[in-house]
Length: 131
Image 1: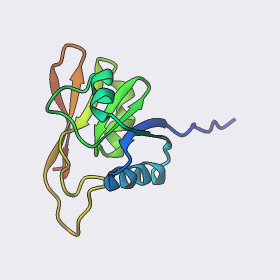
Image 2: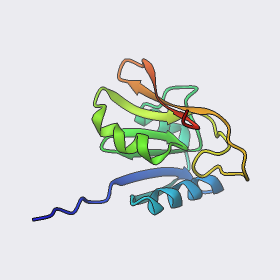
Image 3: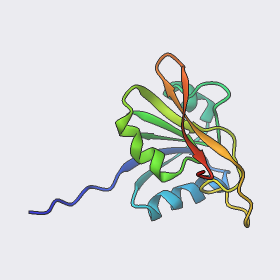
Image 4: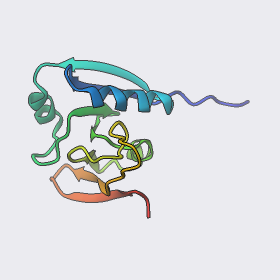
């Protein structure tokens, strides 16, 4: 008997005036995610509540299985997050050109996906473009 895997579900908190947030949501949906879209009036409060460290912020914050996903994170690190229970979340700080939702022609800035544990320690979980 074959089993069908359920689509991953992510809650995305974003400001109503941000265009790239909608592009990231579309990217997730095109990669099989079910997205619950939450338009917020105070993203700083959302980030603080979810434990996103200062300096790691971006324009939107996702939550999947209780772990935060901050910024323009590609699909694979999000899918791998459940294998990292020691992390409270992952982030792509800033808004690097070429990251999902931030495409601009052929330009591709190098960026890292950073994991954060409960003590605030940070670890690189992925590099892009992949080397």
